[in-house]
Structure formats: structure tokens, C-alpha cells
Image (cartoon, rainbow, N blue to C red):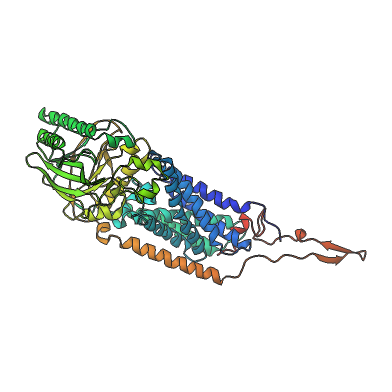
Length: 570
């Protein structure tokens, strides 16, 4: 048997890491969305090759190699995709990146396992949904950033969100990638021998992968347009970026009051229409207006200036070192009214889990001085006669947070956010892309109010009509058409994701079972043979002089990359 080249088993692991880096560029601020399916294709081939090479080397548990390919892919992706977390602390960024990379290890092992099954293209795509479902929920309510769907905010895949939400968009993106991987594998195998059936199967998967986004493009808006209404969002800006922005409560409130009064002056001069309601960002009032009479008076001043209610993003103290993050409807005559309390809090941003223990090792955690208390009711509010669904900041990245607030009669989705901590890091652009997808998913126009940007207005088809620059006082004023009713994605809810996750787990189990029944693929060692020559003497033929049969490519052998991709693998 020809011995494998030293270190060749690292090639799939390196390829997996490179594929992870490609996926980073699919997301904003770069936004080369077409790299997402290419990245999935590279990862699929890497995990499959890594597992096959380990098996051919005669090592037990070949799925381990696939799992490691998943880790390197995840690390390459997470380290650079979540780099905006360095504003909290380099140590927190590194820890989170490593933890998130671990979720891709089961994905790698499963991808390799289901490669043994017929229909592997489909099962490999489903595994992505299972990975994202787990990562978005556990632990600490999960971390939903970096899902494949969020790289597809305005692409041929986007309309699928109205049918099955973000999970269906992720599935379609992954399916194109796994189908592409099957095509590349078939082309590679064709240099040896591949049957007509394999080509037909690969072609069928490619047609299916192309048909899925095509179906999405044919999906009409499923919600009903109402009477247009003028709405406005205020971006007051903050004095400084980073975590220090939290220590500037009074200045941030003054900024938003000043910009609102400027907007009121434009209305009075007839330069812009009178709005039905005005929206302020999260943390626009970081001083509890229920306890601070000065803050209360400033909010009344702003509402009375525009003669319309304002949805204020306020911090309400609930006890020592505790508070609620609220959106409060502030009427110019009666003051505070309806409110929504943020439900999905961000670990290490809005509260510190295991604060006493972790603070010993991560000094930057002391700069998050208080823990927020979550709410327990969806953000369904009425302001200025307009029924809205209110979500606050990172909640927009979680399917259930938005879906729970979108009712049949809520016509506008409002996102209140404070991204000053992550200014110029790429995070605001990523959040804007997620919000675009939500507009399509729920068939609603979206108004974004951000303290320092990016504020904007997005129509129900996902088009960004207005967008502000970061760290610039600005006003978003638009004639918004509320849309009522529910999309198919709203009606089916979480069930498509659950069904795809269940299918992924069942086929993974089937792939493991098939792998256990398969005989080992290690080729027997060829022993030296003794043959008499023409002169009667004996000559020894070494194992190296025995040429391999088809299936071993250049530099092959049972541990080579060429052998790992040979037709002997089903």
C-alpha cells in the first residue's frame, strides 16, 4: 500500500477554514451574498473529504474529522464576523467566537455522515437549519447572529421569507451550496468513472436548487395595504462612541429633544407634513422619567413641540442595579401611556450572566453597570392611531420576538435600537440587513429609529427607501403605507423550522447507522513477492512497484485527498 503523504489530512481542515472566511464576506458591510452558497459548497466538500480520509487511514470514528472541519469553518467565520464585539472587550470577542464555532462541529460530523445516504444534497442542507435552530436558542436564549438567511437581505432568496421565514431562506441558500458541491464532486469523479445515473441525480438537485429561489420570486405581497400615513424617526446622535455612550444619558436626551424641535420647526414652516407619530430610539432617554422630573419635563416638551405622541426609548429603574428597557408612548397632553418592555436581553450587553464569577477574569464587564429585567408581553402598541409591532434592538434577529408582535391588525413594524456601542464596526449594517428580511417575512413596512445610526425606512418588499449616516443627527420622515393581515410565514410560525430540524436529525442518525454497517475501506498491505528470473535466480518485487488500481489519483494512496473523493465513497 502506498503510504499517504505526510500532513495531507490537513488539507480539508484548511479548506474548511477558508470556506468560513468566504462566508464572512457574504454578510454586510461587504455583502457579497453569492459567496454564501459557495462557502457552503466548500464546507460540504471539506467535511466529507476529512471524514473519508480518516476512514481510509484505518482510524476509528471518521466523523471526528468532519467535526473538526466544522470547528475550523466556524472559527474562521465567527472570529471575523463577530469582530464588532471587540468594543465590549477582546477577551469577550475571543470567547464568544470559540463558543459559537463549537456549534459547527455537529454540523461537520452530520454533513460527513449523511454523505453516505441517497439524497445527501437535501439532508446536508437541512443540517444547517438544525445548527441555526440550536445556536439561536441555547444557551442563554441563544445567539442568532450570523445565520445564512441574514446574508440574503435583498437577493433572489429573500422572497422565500414570506413563505417560511428566515429558516426557509437559510435552507434555500444551503441547498444551492450542497447541490454545487455535488456537481463539483461529480465532475471530479468523472476523471475516473461515473455513471449516467450520477450525472442525472446531480442535475436534478441543481434544478431543484435553482427552482427554490425562483418560486420565491413569484410570491406576491400577502398583506393588505391601508391608507398611507406620515411617520417620523429621530436620530439624535450621541457625543461619543463605544460603551462610554451609556454614561452620557443627559446629553443623549438633549440631542433627541433638539432634533425633534428642529423637526417641529420644519412642520410649522410647512416644509414637511405633520406626522401621525414620532419614534425615538432605544436609550434615547437613559434617565428614568418616572423618577427624574427634569427628564419628564423634557419629554413633555418634545411631544408638545410636534403636537403628536412620541414612542420614547427609556430606561426605567426597578431596583438597585436593575432596570427595564422600555418603549413608552408619550402623549403631548397626558404624558406616559402604553409601554413595551424588551423581552430578549443580550448576555454581556444588557446583563452579565454569572457576573460575580466572570468579572474576576473579564475586567471590561464592570463597564456594564446594571442588569436589565426582561418583559413578558409582545410589543403590540397603538400610537397616533397607528397599530405597530415594536421590537427593541437585537430582538429583530430572533424569529419569535418579531413574530409574536406582528398581529393581523398591526400595520407597521418599528425597531428601536441603540448601536452607538458598535459604531463603525459593521454591526449596524448587519442589523439593517436583518431588518430588511423581517420586512419581507411579515409583509410590513419598517421604521428604524437608532440613536447614532443606522436609522431608516424599509418598504414591505424589503427595499431601503431612506437610510441615515452613522453619528449624524438626522430625521427619517416618510409617507408609510401600513399593511395588515398575515403572511404564510406568520401563519405557519415555527413549524417549518421544527420539521426541517427533525428531518436533519433523523437522517443524521440514519447516516451513522449506515456507516457502522460498512466494512473498513483500508486496502490490504501488499507483501513483497519472490519471483525467479530467467537466469534461475530470485528477485524481490517491492510493494511500491505494485501500481494502484483506478480510484487512486496522483499522490494518492488510501490516505490521500484524491482517494477520499474517489467513487468508492457512496
